[in-house]
Length: 163
Length: 128
Image 1 (tube, helix red, strand yellow):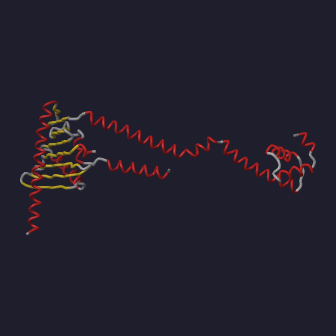
Image 2: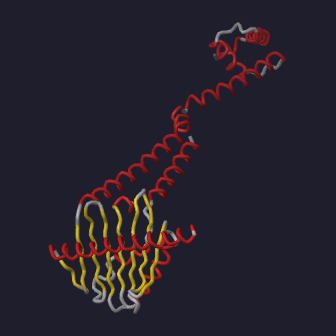
Image 3: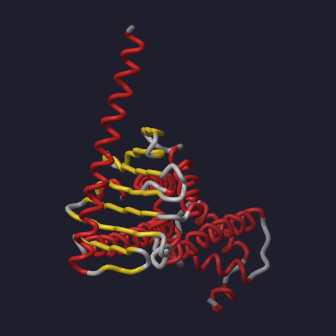
């Protein structure tokens, strides 16, 4: 390139620029010309126009290069939200699963049980079961009695309105 | 995606809120606080998917009053309740529905106001 720099005159440079404008140069030649134009101090409207165009090209290339150069960053940006959402959902489901497993274990751990405390003392085993069974019977009787009373009262109200 | 996440979170919150068990205030009296109390007898059982919790108070008007007041608060959330006052005292039955099952809460207070019986009965499913 140093040799070319020494050889090319203003006219030759202009000729190259003209070829560039006519899209007659290869990519490699365009790159060489671009480098050459940064090394010389030739100024004509055509050469300045080519410099300007090459600067634009360089800018576009830079942008493309920047994007392509950091695929990881772009990819991360693109997938950041879905990945975050998926991770959040996974965490929520894990917590729910752990909770449900613990809860079902707790529920199934003791299918039937009887606990009885009478006047500050805990009853155990069969005596607790018998005591609880007796109380359960009284509860069921109370519910039946109250249901019968409620039905009777309701009947009286209905009769009152139907008079 | 953001919308999906927001909808998913809202659905989860709604589901949790819907699945929340009914907060029965009188249940607090079965947390073991009266296990050592000589004026109180507590009975708890779970059998064939049915829960029973019973509390008998004898000669302790303070506890009876406390239970009666708490049950009054529970009554506001009842699907049905029936109260009968007679010579034998005051009897109340409060019904709550959850998960399609009924929870019966009963309270029987002696005329003196010193003794009472409280119970909660319902299918296991109703408490979930």
